[in-house]
Image (cartoon, rainbow over all chains, first blue to last red; front, side):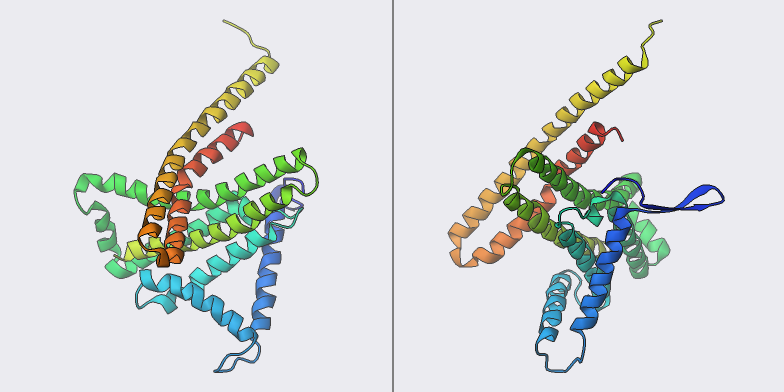
Length: 219
Length: 85
């Protein structure tokens, strides 16, 4: 697929809403998640059986990651963290199909998700300590550490987004080079490694780092 | 003083960017040493307690993915340098 937007809306003669490949694949993955979750939650019963087991397995898996770090508030954060996990995971897995761009291979996606996590972290910190108390917490050990603490806080979304972006794009570049260099069956194990394994683990890490940031802000 | 034609200027900038991209990847040494050290510690832990192999491997993978981050940052800078962004 070519870089640049596929559809371009114009408003008053200026470029208004570019619709890029990343957006299209993102919407397709949202559609897949929607259809999947509607299918998995038909006819809920108290004693689960069949496909409800699968859904409960995933939710319990994510809940077990949240609960050790945020004791007592796991259920409150579960929708947000599960959304991040599932969206990044499905996006990475769709990107394995040749010819489909990975939505997290675009810095816009990862930076957007990291900024959402940043806003949630600030909100949780202010909710715990009050607005003035949280800001005073940056000057905590010694007052002249205030700029260093602020820069450290601002570096968190940057490292959060660049970790995911760099892993996915680096894997994509290596796969492209291997496709040009080697014939038919050799790229398959590499594609499996970079696409499926690294993608799944990076989705997991993205979510867990988000949980870690929230638990640090609340302490 | 000295006049450079646009082709010469572009070529010089491209050349220096490629050299800079290559030397940016020297930063791959750090995560390599750190992650190898962590893998060694994990192997020692498995030697002491072979029945805890699953959780030890999970913990090691978690730590290694996070500590590979700075190597990935230098890769991103090298990619930006090569493609001229």
